[in-house]
Image 1 (spheres, rainbow, N blue to C red):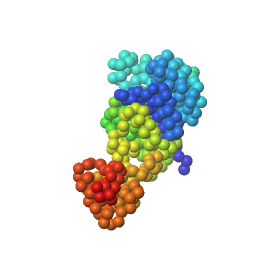
Image 2 (cartoon, rainbow, N blue to C red):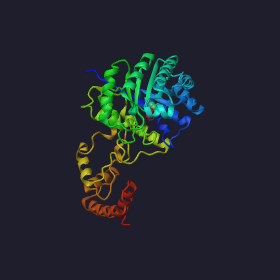
Image 3 (cartoon, rainbow, N blue to C red):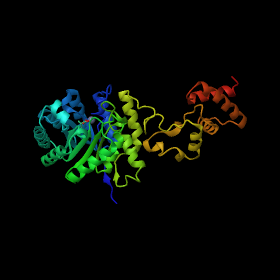
Image 4 (cartoon, helix red, strand yellow):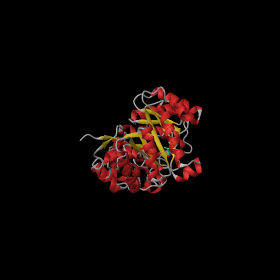
Length: 387
Ligand code: KIV
Ligand code: ZN
C-alpha cells in the first residue's frame, strides 16, 4: 500500500519567533533554515515579509539559500503584504505565499470590523493576487476553531476556486479538543475532497496542540503546521518533534501516512533553536527535554540496562541523541547502574572496591540530587588514593 505524504510545514521562524523573547537575527534565521532543510521539512515559513525590512531581508536570503524545502512568507489578505511576500521569496526554487484572514464571528466583528461577505471578497482577491506571484498559495481561516462550519465552507469554496492549493484550518486560540478537531476536519475533508490539501495549525493553550494535530491527520488533514520545541505565541504551537515521533512510533495506527523528516536531525535541530533563542525546552518535555531518556530510579535503570525497551519506546539514537549519558544517577539508583556508569567512565573496580564506592555514592546522593560524571570521578579517585 503506498503511503500518503504528510506535509511538514515548519513555522519556527514565523509563529515561533512570536514567542516572547525568541526574536532571532538574520544570520541566525539562515542557520536555522539550513538546519530545517537538513531535517527534511517540506515547507519553511521563513517569516512575515511585510512585518519589517529585517524580516523581508531574512526571508529573501533564506530564499536564495534553501533548495529542497519550499520557502514561504506569511501575508495578511492585503495587496501590500502579498507583494512583499512575493518579492521576498522570488529567488526560491520552490515558493509559497501564505495569506490569511479571520473567519470567526468575534474576529470579523471586533478585529476586522467587516461583514462576512466582505471577508470572502477580500480572501478571494488576496488568493488571486498571490497567484500572480506563485503557483503555490495557501489560504488560512484565522480562528477557524471558533468559526461557523457553514461560513467556513463558503470561504473555502471561494478561495479554492480562486487558486488556493492548501486550505489551513488554524485553532488560533488553542481551544478545541481532539474529538472536535477530528469531527470538524472529517466534515471539511468530505466537503473539499481532493480539491485542496487540508492543513491544521494548532496552538497549545490547553496543552492539546499535538493531540489535535494527530486527530486531524486521522481525519484526512495532510499538512501540519508546527514548530521546533513547540515555540510560538503564548503557550506555543504544536511541536514538530512530537508529531513526527508519534507518527513514527505509532505507525501501527498511522499506517497509511509518512513524513519526509530525517528524525536523526531532530535533536540537533532542537539544540540549535534552544541555543539561538535561549529558550530551553522544559526538562520533562517529550522527545527533546533533558530528562526524556534519563532513567533515575533504580528499578528503571536496572530494566533499561537489561533491555532498553523496558522503559524506552524508541531509541534516543533515532532522534540523533548521543546516548552515552542518558543515565542520571541519584539516590534511587541501583548498584547495577552505578557499576555500568563507572565502567563507561573507565573505572573497573573489584567487588570490595565497588561495595565501598557504592556506599559512598549513596551517602553523596543523600546530600546531592543529581550526581554527575565529575562527582563520580572524584568519588572513585579519592577512594583509590585514600583521600
Ligand atoms: O494562529 C494562527 O491563526 C496563525 C495564522 C496566521 C495561520 O498563526
Ligand atoms: Zn499561529
